[in-house]
Length: 196
Ligand SMILES: CC(C)(COP(=O)(O)OP(=O)(O)OC[C@H]1O[C@@H](n2cnc3c(N)ncnc32)[C@H](O)[C@@H]1OP(=O)(O)O)[C@@H](O)C(=O)NCCC(=O)NCCS
Image (cartoon, rainbow, N blue to C red):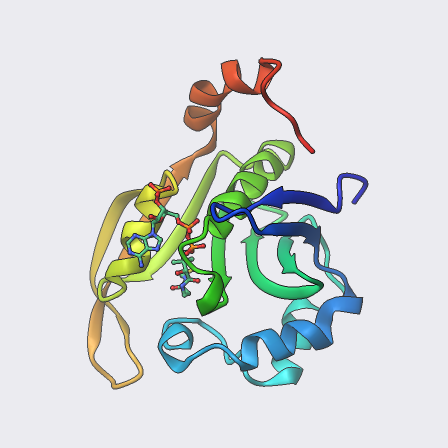
């Protein structure tokens, strides 16, 4: 908690504040989810338009199993990126990443900042691998995740069903935290790097 808030710049110069989500943010988070367009909600895995569901999922967070970072512009939530992980057992070194950015703040580098934040948090949580699960039809998101450093690791044929009842391939994308650290370490240890 001590590291937050962090104020950073989007690619167009707009300032964004990154913060760890707390219970005080839940009402604003519910509003953020409710105003997402249907096309961005189609692939989300729980009904985030239902306030009770959002409260159940994000309320009273145990940051060891769910690490949600929000991006605020002028005080309003414009994006959220979360690591979900099992805090016990054989999956505890794997973190699942889910990201959601307000349409008007997409393609401005907000996910890039949030994923960097999750990457450093993953190192602290002893997570070796960050994984994202996408449906094969999410072409833009798959491209964006590739740009964010994830690579396609597996395609599970006809593994999931879309809201129209059509069976779709599940694309598993992963980012190896240790491999990425190897490429970032020189930069992180250099005087140019600031944790803000
Ligand atoms: C996919 C999503 C998370 C990307 O977030 P974003 O903040 O727009 O991403 P960024 O601006 O940080 O861009 C990251 C990279 O992806 C690329 N990118 C972003 N959106 C893209 C798109 N629609 N098509 C192709 N490339 C895209 C950017 O060019 C950038 O690459 P670069 O750094 O090499 O220039 C966002 O569009 C979103 O929330 N979509 C709806 C919800 C969703 O699908 N979530 C994914 C499931 S967890």
